[in-house]
Length: 82
Image (cartoon, rainbow, N blue to C red; front, top):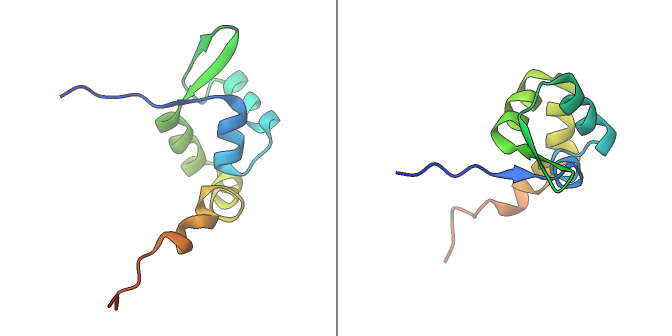
């Protein structure tokens, strides 16, 4: 089975994780996330972003509060659906 790699732009990653684009660019510059360059723009590997967020307490908390995590409760399906 083929493995699909999901890549995000700097702005998409910033919105997803609830941080500033500068924070994402710093992670790229520090070499803590995997990326490729497409037409002079960073495309960052989602799995490496998730690993980075898991190891970085501030980013992990912002992911839950300001990033995609803020929508998790709304996605839950009630147990007693009629």
